[in-house]
Image (tube, rainbow, N blue to C red):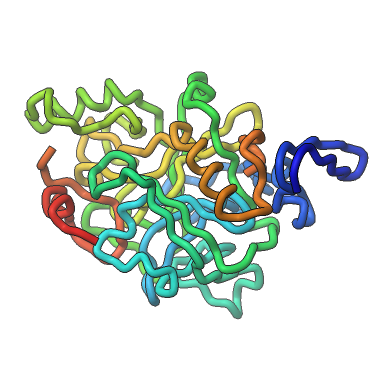
Length: 330
């Protein structure tokens, strides 16, 4: 539908530039549900959290195995890390997304609002070349998902500056708790609050710790970091592709995508994240061009070194060496 259309939702009128968005086919428009979980109570550290708190949390499953985390950003699309597809076919018929369950291996009989959707499309960022930077990907589900109290999208940021007054955010996932401690099949979703660290400071941390020449890139301009100085409260292998969620003015936005960290519990080495705000225009352009009825790009919040390190996924792999990844072709 071209031009300007007017959609009347109750007593509110919202103007959409471009095609009629997919959100109007859902019981509630994305503008009203993104980044607004059912509950916000914090869970004690180390305990399972609730999807009422993180309803955008999704799982990527390769064949029958949990592979990476992902984030629901619209009824049809999830956001994840490009490296989750290392050494695996990008043929979507081997992949699926699971939503609505906090368990690694959910039981449909016990979780009525648990859904599985096969993938119909996998899109890596065009300039991603198995290099640590530009580590972002989109995956389209075979059919749209209906939002429930445990399945809702997160908002997309327009700039990392919107988080400048945010002191800490939350990383969620099903990864290891420590370097050698895997979660079991019925283990629940974990949450950790982490302070934000800017890209330059984090890059210095890693260069000093690894005694790496300054000309060797480690933490690139499209990344930032989050984590404690002790390194004990961190993401770990298996969390890859999942969200770093930040609350701004009462609404949650996805600041980052989990990509890597050197070890899981090493001091002064925080986790590294793809800066989602840099890629928001690409995300919106990609899903607009791929899906005729997706929300237009004018409304951002309607969805609102050759060294060894741990690429934090896939879940079933062990340590991965970056220079091996760089030399491997898809």
